[in-house]
Image 1 (cartoon, rainbow, N blue to C red):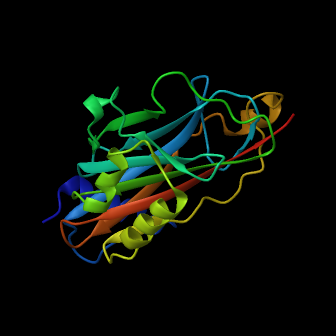
Image 2: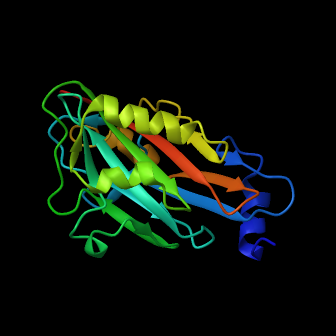
Length: 215
């Protein structure tokens, strides 16, 4: 039987484009949010960012979500993928993602958007159970593109895995030289992803693409 807060979440969000509601009671639930932090202000991942601006990707878990294992990858300019979570400086390197918690990534000094017009890609992977393929992401900080794509294909192919459709592009400039446009979304509280399963096994893959431009 699902916890009351899980049933409430399913009732509230079952009609949204982010919901994957199960009929009846759910045994597993992932309810996670993500946003881009610029100097302490949250912005949608679908906004248009400024090249050279420092930022963090913040991944959050609702209090109604189940415990999960989290893996966050960043695609590098050479096509390889770097694991930015788990990280030894966060929870001793454990991939465990607790309900009602947030991950500020990467750990430490914020990276800067590259000094060009382009896209920075991240993949957020959540699972309510340990998966031998996903554990590979903890064994080496950098993986070849083909290796990562093969792992993701196998994980997505499972009936209990849900994939987030990228949010609609928001052509609002934020960051450097964008104060007037950024005001329109200053109350943003994150993009949220809800997935449920009729068993205790559930996985989610969220693709995040951060667009940036020279200004």
